[in-house]
Image (cartoon, rainbow, N blue to C red; front, side, top):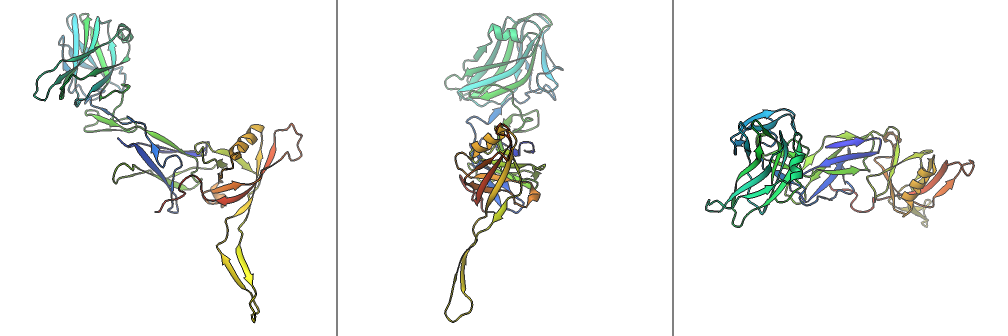
Length: 405
């Protein structure tokens, strides 16, 4: 997902790839050149960024498929006013006592299981437990692992939605996971338990709700009625994207063989703005106000040699040097002046991007020489200043500038 932000002079690139440890993001320019996006070649993803929700009907949007009445044999229905989406599960008991529901899942056995759910109770339950049954490799039942909500957690779910997260540790020799149940004890006759936004996960997570409908997610089977995989979404801010021309972004994962994803073309409109970007802070370009278009000098490297017997000298030349020139920038406040001087303080080249119709290409990397500051006839206390920036056009610093097509 690619979102140009003209007000900040950047393109925000949202990328995700299940189980990837890192991603590489490449900008495809209109002339076919490929430029690695600074800060994203590669971009490292945090461990555990990909999550798998093994609940096969996590939000009860389409049906009650898989949910089974348990303790107290409650009647199961769909109800509105959900914690996620439009529907939730309601388990209503006829007689006072326990009110339990078995949760559909396909959880593989692992050392830990994390279960999260939105819970709402019609009355304060005497207890609320979440249990996971395990079996060994021979199919024999092992000790059911049970987590009990605290009194404060139970209180938080009375007549309102509250997210409850529990973790259980598998017993020794566990090979498969059986029933996952939620049971509210001591409920009154006609009382109900509402469940929604269920997550059943391996290992230890924060238990927040994820499913295949959210950004970075996909359903492994029927949407809404299957387990889901949700990759961590990485936001890359490209502060070097050219203005007023269509650009495309390509994302690959170096830890996988083959495969890539390409964005649709987007245009970062300049709206008449010019930006400078420091290579160490590519996500925060500075808007600047050039007084005039810079005058460019393209120096020649050549020498002429007189030859005996010839009327004209012989000229020996090499490739013409990179352009040099001087950039005059207006700053309206001391804060603008100080921000620009701070970007120039360490002597690193800066990236200069003008509107597309200025004829300066996608942008120029400028090595700035001695900086001049001129109040231009204003009183010293007046904040307006004119900065003169002599420059030489150089290659991009800090890493590869381009990639082979």
